[in-house]
Length: 102
Image (cartoon, rainbow, N blue to C red):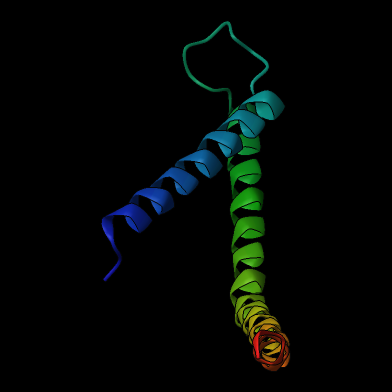
């Protein structure tokens, strides 16, 4: 299960995407403000716009899910390499410190 903080972050991210999508489609499709309801053209445009953005978002998320494990693996290898280098540097300095004190 997800922690509450992660759930809150996910909700916030979803709402940001939703609000941005709403703004884009409104600007693109709403042109006639003489009526309370959308015209047929506006409704069709909004459906197409939202569908396109949702499909794009799904495609991006699919790519992200595929690439993320590789990125995490690469970061882990970099961290392990840096830790090994720091350990080797510390080990090479330790004998010099003992010989100076003697």
